[in-house]
Length: 300
DNA sequence: AACACATCCTGACTGC
DNA sequence: TGCAGTCAGGATGTGT
Image (cartoon, rainbow, N blue to C red; front, top):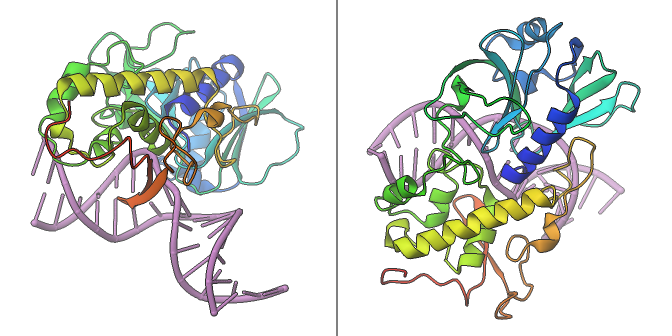
């Protein structure tokens, strides 16, 4: 499922292919991918036609592409199964593709999404607190953020990510630490895969109450979070179930580095005990029952 | 503010 | 073989 590394791989791909070329036409095959856009299909197409994307910016799992209409951007979220594919215009039609955008440079941006949890919309940009709104190293620093993304916290790879602030908030949380890691308004970019992997590396149980974890251990945990995300970005993301592809339709290679997620029954890479999967909060949580135990006393 | 829970959605898989 | 049921889970909205 697309998380930060997958979104970043897609963002980079888009930055290399779809910028500065006018959008000639848009074909919508399933308008449900535009349900977040207030004006619907017609409005979406008429705003974008003849316009071009200026840059590709990311915060957490959200990607947005400012357009040459002052103060507006197209916002993309891949949801559970979304893919942004860039093809030549004569490339064969692909299953589950919900929308085509034909560009003057001969390329076609395709939005594919099996489960339709992803979305595209045009949104207004507003000022951001801090030096930059998100990650877009190829372009000039973006100081504006879409309204619909402004509540999303900075991600661990953002230079302005404030670990001390996050730690402070965690001191008031009684829920399990994994719940907090998945809270995009606390820290963004982490989903089920990288939460399980980071917790495994830090030897912390997913249901360890957040406030019971020492500052030292939280620092260690977030060190692992950052490390896992960086490694996965370098590998082009995780393609666990064929749902995630880069813009060329190719898989990422991080799946071979997974130690917990999807490893149910396989030996723990540290101690050899079988990795377990537990259903928790409508999700699967993968962990080593030996290395990752809930501690009654404060976790140091 | 934090928490708990329901909702959206389709295709792959399981069991009878 | 076929059909019904279950599962996968990110974001959002509601009620407490």
